[in-house]
Image 1 (tube, helix red, strand yellow):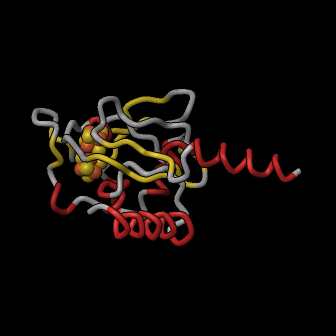
Image 2 (image 1 turned 60 degrees about the horizontal axis):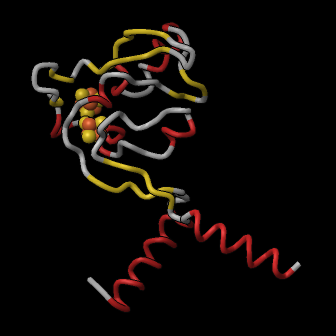
Length: 145
Ligand code: SF4
Ligand code: SF4
């Protein structure tokens, strides 16, 4: 798609993401099924989960949490891995029925938790409003003053 139609599509997409979905980033790329995002997971519910007691309560809220087991704890909180990951193939054993949270990964909330994308993840999160656009807006404002 090129030309006017493409520009229009981009503007509409931008509007939808910014003002309807309230997003700051586009998710670009595709999954290469490396399985890394299923192996070192922090869980956030209000705060990043710090104790097994907190986690036990959370399990009652959503079945996704019952797939996780604690493997470590670091300065951010408890670290989990998903028991549905086949460690030989790095594939999800319930791929067709995986929860929505897995289908939507990665989302920008990851950054708000202080997290980063798994190394070599096939996705990247790109700001909807580029640095250049922000810079231009600030320059225009400063000129008016
Ligand atoms: S359910 Fe599947 S996709 Fe979701 S975290 Fe577990 S292994 Fe990964
Ligand atoms: S880290 Fe990225 S590429 Fe790897 S399985 Fe997760 S979403 Fe797919």
